[in-house]
Amino acid sequence: MTRPAVAVIGECMVEVSLAKSASGLSASSLAANLSFGGDVLNTAVYLSRLGCGVDFVSAVGDDKISDWLVDQWQQEGVGCDLIERMPNQSPGMYMISTDASGERSFSYWRDSSPARKVFDDPEKAEALFAQLGTYSWLYFTGITLAILPAQARESLLRFVDRYRAAGGKVAFDSNFRPRLWPDRALAKDVFNAVYERTDLALLTIEDEVDLFGAGSLDQHVARLQGSGIAELVLKQGPEGCEIILANQRLNVPAQKVRPVDTTSAGDAFNAGYLAQRIAGKTPEQAAQVAHRLAAVVIQHPGAIVPKAVTEALEFGSA
Image (cartoon, rainbow, N blue to C red; front, side, top):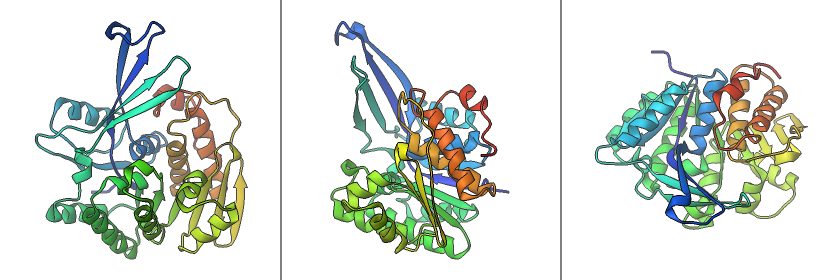
């Protein structure tokens, strides 16, 4: 069987959005909307919409909510054959509440998320790794690594070594979230280990500063280049992105728009860039398309914008 180009590895949770009316917090004034969210899943959806074949590697439960999640992902063209359905389990969940001024706050229930256990069983993990070895690209993030137990994380990295030795490529976004790590020292060690195994790094400069400390852009670039990353993209929000290759460095400006919701901007950028590079576009062309997609996404609320929004746009070329 011919595999899609990319396997994305990580977690997607149920998203419950609460909107508070101006009258207060009584039960009658609350309305809830059900959706889903997760950094790698956001990227997978946009990869699919850009015409790039993608499979999601994760685990959910065997309940009705899990059925609904998988159905939603399949409707987006994301392959779900490698999603494990764990008996008597339910997916993780997070809640978003928005106040009258538009400020958002989050509450998470993910400690028992099935996605944390996807590599726990050594025999099942090896069978899954054998299937992952048939993909051209693996994509995962720092959140993927943070939710895995140490032993599972080490198993994944050992597989990555074998995978790259056989010609596979790894794309990685650090997505550093301090609350998911017991301490920064561990996060640094894990990220440094992954950077040494990364072919395409799609990083955010704020995350690098947050974890590795203050420093100039050039200092962070030098540190990351020392890891042997072949293609480094440092996202800088409205300042665009810096692309660093072995013999080339260029800045590609972002599109100037008025943001409504910056959720998933980086995830969408990653999808645009990776899809274009897989399609054979130059790094500059890939970044231009990635910026265009991110600009569209941040002009709409939520991580996944309606299909009609992206279908109405041409992203095939920069």
